[in-house]
Image (tube, rainbow, N blue to C red; front, side, top):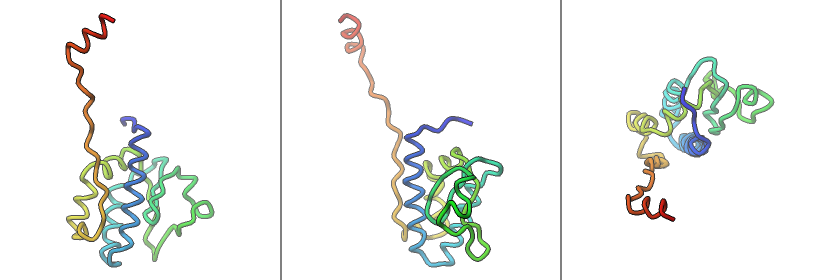
Length: 136
C-alpha cells in the first residue's frame, strides 16, 4: 500500500472528526444508517488502526479499547469502533466518497461538509529562471 503523508493524516483526522460530530445532529435513524455505511466503507480486517465513529479518533488497536478510550465501544449492539487502515481512511475522506455517501442517504444538506482541498500543483519554473539559477 502507498505511504500516507503526515499532512494527509492530519487532514483526514480533521475531516473525520468533523464528519462524526456532524452526524450527531441528524435524526437517529438516518444517522445510524450513515454510521453503518461508513463503518462498511472503512472496514479493513486485521489492520493496526481503529476509527471511533462516535468522536472521530483514529489510533492503534491497542489504544482504542475499553478502559483506554472514553467512548462506549458499542451502542445498542452497534459497534462504534471499526478496524481500518490509513489507506481506507484516505480513500473515504480525501475523495468524494464520504460526500457521495451523504448525498445518497439524503443528509448532505444537514451536515457541514469540510471541503476537500484540491491537490496543489508544484509551481512551474520557467526556462529563464532555471538558466539564471544555473549561471549564478
